[in-house]
Length: 68
Image (cartoon, rainbow, N blue to C red):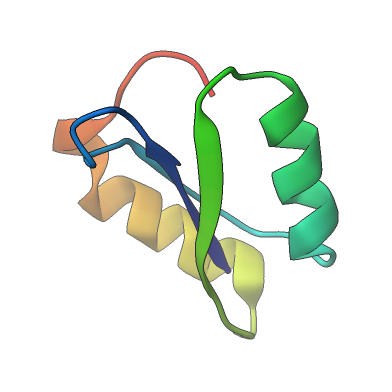
């Protein structure tokens, strides 16, 4: 599991939660697609990663933003 945060001018930002075998590579891919600075906030192993990711997405659904 990974959590990547965008850092806007107010110091607040959106957080992307996901699963990645190579978190730094995923951060780089996302950084290329956005002008905002992205920060890898957390990375931690979990098994099974996809099932936990789905649970986290369901819990955060009320705050979901459109897009990536």
